[in-house]
Amino acid sequence: METTAEFDAYLGGIVSSCFTTLAIALGTETGLIDFLCAADSPLTIEQISEGTGLKERYVQEWLGAMVSAKLIQLDADSNKFYVQPNHRHPLRVRGAFAQGIVPWCKRFDLVKSCFQKDGPLGFEYSEEPSWFDWFDFYRSVTCDHVVEQEIIPFLGSTLKEKLESGIHVVDIGSGTGNYTIALAKMFPKSTFVGVEYAEVGVHKAEERAKEKGLKNVTFQKGDAHNLPDSWTEMFDWVFIYDVLHDIADPHKAIREVRRIMKHDSVFSLVEIGVHSDLSYNIGDKTAAMYYSASMFVCLPSSLSLEPHKGYGACWGMEACEKAVVEGGLKVISKTKIAGTKILFVCAK
Image 1 (tube, rainbow, N blue to C red):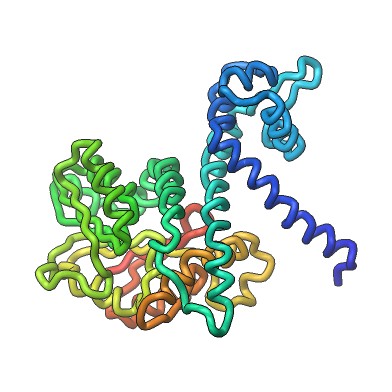
Image 2: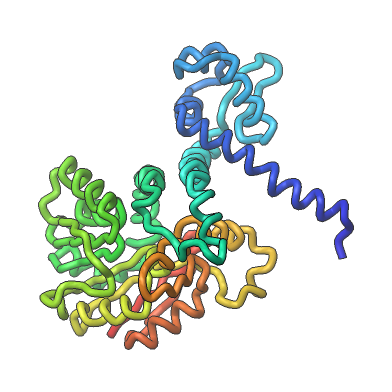
C-alpha cells in the first residue's frame, strides 16, 4: 500500500502538469513552438522574441516552463534554446492537442450544471461552438498522419483497389471533413459523402473542399439514426472514426450503417481502445484522460438528445463490439491503432 507521501507526490504530478499543459497550448497558439521547431540553430531569448514578434519578458517566462519540463533544451554555455530534431513532430502534435484545454475549460460551468440533479441532461455542440475551432485545428495538424498510419494500412488490398477504380464512400460523423477530404484527394475516381449533425462542422468542411477544388466530395447535415431512404445498399465503404460513442443511440446508427451497405461492402469503425469494465482501466492514464475529455464533450452531447443513452467515449471496446454484432454485422478483424484506439473492420 502506498504511503500518504507517495500518493501526494503522484497526485501532485497530475495537477502540476495541467499548468504545464496550458503553457504548451500557449506556445502553440502564439507560434513559439513552430518557430523553435523550424529553427536551424539554437537561439537567444532576444532572437526568439524578435522572430515571433512577442514580448521578450513573456517569452522568457514561457521558456522557463518549457526548459524546466525538459520539452525545450537550453545550452547553458551560450544561453541559447533549441528543440531536438526527434522532438519536433511530437511537440507540434501534442501542442495542438494541448490547445484543447482552452475550449474544454469554457464548458466548465455548463458541465457543472449538468451534474446537478435539477440541471440539464446535457447540451449540444452549438451551445459552446468554440470547441469545433480547436477540433478543426487539431485534425488539420494530425490528418495526414491519421490517414497514412491509421486508415490506409488497414483498408486491405481489395478495398484499396476498389477505391482506386472508383466506389461510393460515406463518412458518418465527418466533423470538419479533414479525413474525408484527404481520402477524396487520394482516390479521385471514388465519390465521398460526409455526414455531420453539427452545422458548424458541415460549413467548415464545405469551405475546405472548395478551397482544395475537389469535385468528388460533398458534405451534408444529417442524422446517423435516420439516413436517407435512397441510400439503401448504396455504399461500398462506410467508416466512422471516433464518433459512434457521441451518437445519441449507437445501436440505431449501426442498424442504419447495415442498411446503407452493399452486400459486399466494408464498414470501418474506430473507437477508443479502453475496456468496458472499469476495473481493467485502473492505472491507465490514457483512459483517465479520455474519461475526463468525454465528461466535457462526448457525454453532454449524447445525453442532450433522445434516447439519452450517454455512453461516453469510454463505453469500451467490448461493449462496442457487442453493439456491432447485435446490429447485424460481422466483425472481421479488430486492431489496436495509435496505441489508444481500436479499429473494427466489419461486413454484412
